[in-house]
Length: 173
Image 1 (cartoon, rainbow, N blue to C red):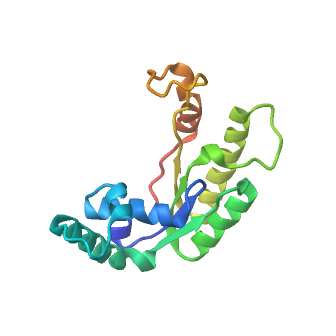
Image 2: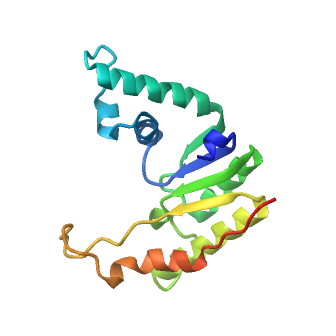
């Protein structure tokens, strides 16, 4: 929504290449699945798909100069902080970090949970210093037994709960 309000938005992808991020954005803008976007061929006879892709392309062109996507795969929090600062200097008022669970920590901590707290604290401080809004994406922990269909238990929510406890909202005037 910030893009359509004329704001510049930065997207730091910690896990997916820019092509995948673009496909996801196009799927949202076009109202179709990313899988359909990925499989689309320009010479397709599928009228519905052509119309959706055209709609997504028009929307992408409208926001293209305000959307910065950076591939940060394999970066630690120091390198990611540098990317955040560069985005803020280029006018981004909102930065999305997708996703914090794979960000490397430059300072060894007791466990991964403490590393995530350290990383999140540093990101939050940088966002405040650069006067940018920061949206941090996390996910539930995966079951250790590999049973992806199992109902999540309270342990699956730890990381997300820690991040939620650190979250705050402040109106910027």
